[in-house]
Image (cartoon, rainbow, N blue to C red; front, side, top):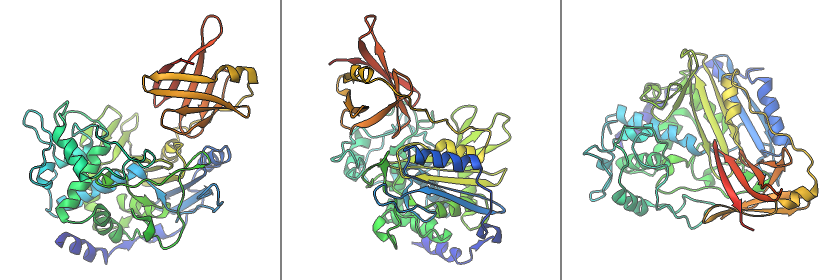
Length: 456
């Protein structure tokens, strides 16, 4: 296609500024490296790699292993699943194709899908491509007909037929452009629609539009294309988890990459890497939607505004089954950071602190000793919803919690009644009745508290 030939020709004249080739000492704050060591040493994460850059250079700090069983050290070339960070590549592809005239930001997504496919509308308002990029399409976070054959690889078998079936039967609760609602479905639909427009798979779309021009040789979807086996394995604590794979909604989270490649991408975003992609990148930075006073949305990027309104942090995070990622940059300070982790536990706070040190890194809870008799009193089955239970067991003087359809994970006491996970940011607090018998628990996760009655 013409668009790809033009961009590939332009990529021959890319110039990496000399400052970006130099390693910069002491660029990564000691607070960041200390937090990385603590999360690995305390068993929250198997391995974490951090990369930072500014106009003077770039620096990496890697600690831990690519696989808890193999003890291979991670580095800036280790490949991780980057999950929803993929979305800023999908929206950059949109901006590039719009700049070439291949599509328009105001084009209905229905125009890029096969004839006969129905895309929901409301009061005559259609879902436009920029709505998908801004998370304002009105589509839900996930399609209601997502029913994976393997819950540990939830998107692998969600194909075009299922997508078309969902779109044809879905009714929008609000008009496109009316409100922000983060949507994996919307981002995946955008990537699929763009891929259909140029007649190539999503992997080829991103490789030819972005990765080849920027020299990002280790950003890909198919891990079999890696030139070596320097690939991280996903974990929950020290337990290995399956890789995730994507079909039709690859644009929501299918990419794998390295800290080195992500710093190349971020250097280009800041203009520290001279590139013909920069004008389109700047388009993705424009604030297009306001979530609240402090949080805005560009094309794909979330943008946090500081209290004075003088600074902006462009960022995106990502999580798959056993990985967590964060990328961000501050255009005023000309700094950027990438944090990649091959565990479920969040590292977002490390990335935010690296850019804005006034934002503190979360303190990890400390474990205390609890008498066995108290632990035994918590053993039982707790009902959060009619079909969703949490089973608490005591194994070798430690409690495990197993939710319906999930594996059991150890929980650690921070008090005699409150316990925390190391695999995710979540806590459980046990409750007793007036007679002192354990009657229920409350699950705290993602800012929500969900009570559950003990049923046996």
